[in-house]
Length: 352
Image (cartoon, rainbow, N blue to C red; front, side, top):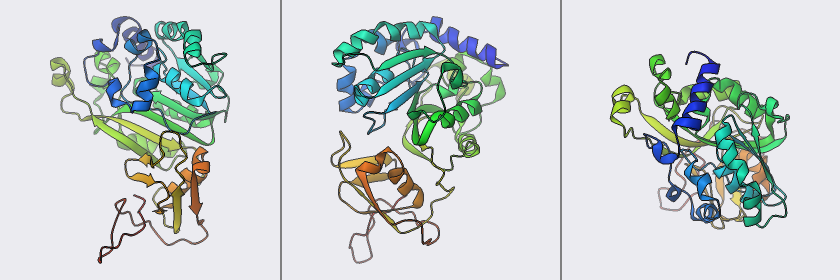
């Protein structure tokens, strides 16, 4: 696995021939349906069993407020997430799934008409293309054409992650979002382990060190990303524990926006935001990330980056943001979501 071609061939063989269904995986990288929210589980009950049984993922990278959006699913596999999103974007939305493994795509394509009928659509709003996530232009994805990019435990399998993220930010519209789940490592994985085809196929040895990921996004022009959820990955296989047990692996769900107004640290401009409670499935609160929970109608003091993520994206119609960046007050004083003054009076919520 010294070059991109051999890495791709190894991954294609592992997911096209070695694995027959998700029970063949040897680690806890894949999540169960129980990890999803009830609304999404209800939609999955309408998706064909074969699609779910032969799907491999480490999270549930399906963001809110995507009705009418064009969504690109990188490494879509048998199409579980693509079909889930197909239901959420509605008949006026569009979903494009891209994968390099024909065996997986054959399963996904088999159910296009069946799933459209189950969702009550006159015609399908999803299509599946053969291609490589490092070269989205080769799959016909134009610049600034995608509202949301999702991916479920696939980027770690790429031999050229810099190309992947460069392509993602090329195809996203201004204000568009990358929302993905993947396996990350608490340290850099030794080179000898990266050559192990089983560890690679199990989404472990290709895992990025989280700080290298931060630097890579910075190089792509994205100065701030947010962690939505974190889950430790256990090495349940004795052989793999012996090889890589010294490394801590995590399944992270991450969101990042294509915004040129973001700064590399939280800055304070005195902006306040109000969630309007209008996002489908989230009438009482909206979770932006693991330290931003916006209650409906409750004022929240936010940093400039968070204000931009809410006011300059598809979320703008669901929030009222008061203030601008005309006056700078220094770095944002990060505080818990609900802090209090010394006399017990509640203050406006903090950002971070």
